[in-house]
Figure 1 (cartoon, rainbow, N blue to C red):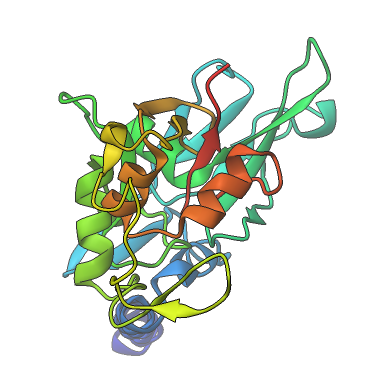
Figure 2: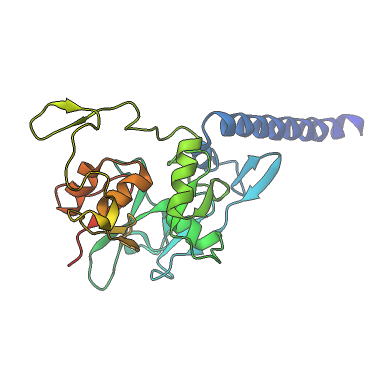
Length: 261
């Protein structure tokens, strides 16, 4: 009798040890590379996809993407899947693309038009899982890693809150500190040169140019009556925003900029 029970005891011990090792590996991986958790979660022996964060096991939850109900879903882990991949009636995780600014993008096809539209994954996750009662315009990555789109790493924020956070965690630095400017002649000066508009900021400067600000999904955020005000607010280079507004580049400082029509 005892010999018959021994194999089952050994199996039970083996399963408990294996589970402990798996949990330890996931917890370690979360500290080293949180964006890799979704890879671990797809291992064959995981009956329920989960991640370990601060000792809490979370199950992967899927929700329909607005305007693509019954076709595409996004999860709280930052994954996106098609429910009818290549019209085979089988679900499949979709490969995400990398935006030059570091964000993850996903292309969703419209069955009526056949055209594919790209969305930022972090915004899809936030819209599906994070309430936004104050209707804030941007989504912030708490750890600064734009590839980590787990719901626990995202929060709604105003553009100002987003910018302040980026300075706090070191993603942005003061680009103009200690830098002298150039005149049109190419000679450097340190503020001694005087002109009729020197010291006149914003709309008080007759050379001001208005600009419209959008997020990467094309959602309108704000109209700036003076481009220089936007540059001061984001500590940005006016040249990059101006190039974007003049269709010489697609984005600048994580936003799309356009001239008013």
